[in-house]
Length: 209
Image 1 (tube, rainbow, N blue to C red):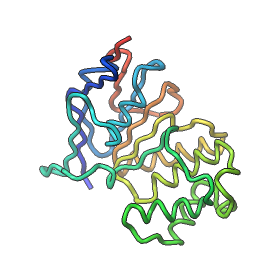
Image 2: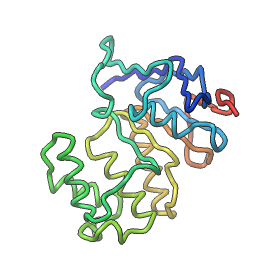
Image 3: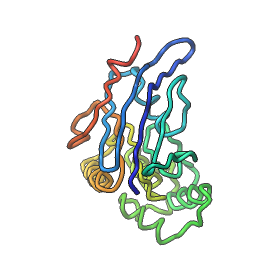
Image 4: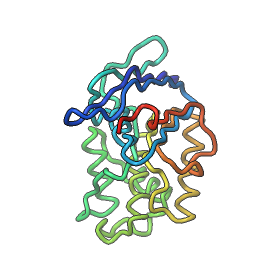
């Protein structure tokens, strides 16, 4: 799928405070966007807008395939990993993935689910309640969630948060693979998280104190 992803004049206001404004960028398949900015500049807010979790106060996000504008929710095209995503602590990792896939209207496939858990090094803990997981294990499980529907757009907010060396290497591998097949959007101030990027949005410029 050859996608074009565009944000035009994005502005967000909370309680009469302008968080950022005039944020615009354009991406095509095979490209990486890096979002940077000091704490409070709105990185996670922009990620939510990009991911169709939050609406902008002004501006719009457009996704096109060729000449056709895709008007449906971006959620079917997009996988998201972010600190604010919630997991079902009382369920196992396998149950979490099963219900999440079912909620997307898909028929869960146990072989696919276990291949995802193997990919994120959690297959041996697939039956354990998520409440017993460390923060790093929960971060790995979020990657399984994000990849479950083979998204064309992958959005990562603080991608290596809480991860050890093995987990960080896993993330780098996923990012490199996705860069070759889709669009990658990364929000981080740790430039070691990305090997390269094509476009940078610095919210220190667009943010308001």
